Image (cartoon, rainbow, N blue to C red; front, side, top):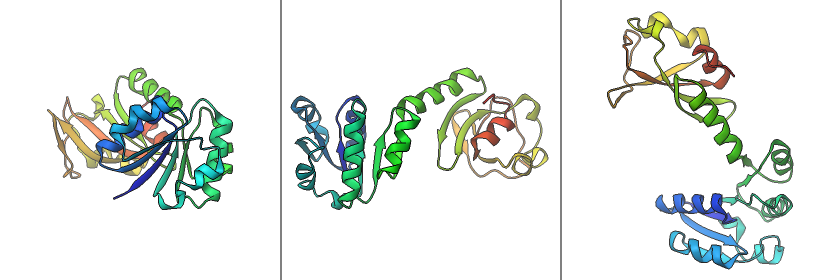
Length: 217
């Protein structure tokens, strides 16, 4: 079973803790605020009160024994940066840190973070695509510019086959599945014919998907 060290129990950190707990993952949650620690105690394996900018305290947590360390601090960037660097110096296998902007992300990556998340930016991007484009129902960003989009079948595709449209060759976008009437079909072939009311799960570079489905970037 994976075990996670989670530092920072604001709203973002609490949500991570609850979700990890639902997945039955072992979590040690840490915050300097006693009230925050008590609030999250029912959802985690261990909850500890302490100042993670204190290297001596951080050493007592056994940082190198965790599969991943998440620094979820959002309101004190200097502390987040300091903790991120200390975790890596102490042998943390993987450090994921929260950033509020691109500049913070660059500093965190240069100082030990293996990955950075910016929940505000990611949510803003999701909302812009989800509610700004009538043919986009959902999307999930992956690594290296790739994403999975849930999109409506374009009107001009209705009655045509996957093979005839050939978006894999034309746009380097793959159709993963077709959803219709609440059912998902992943066993699709080149002679599959599109119909009105269907939606598609497609995989590719975000820019290629946007171009293929005429989404303004």
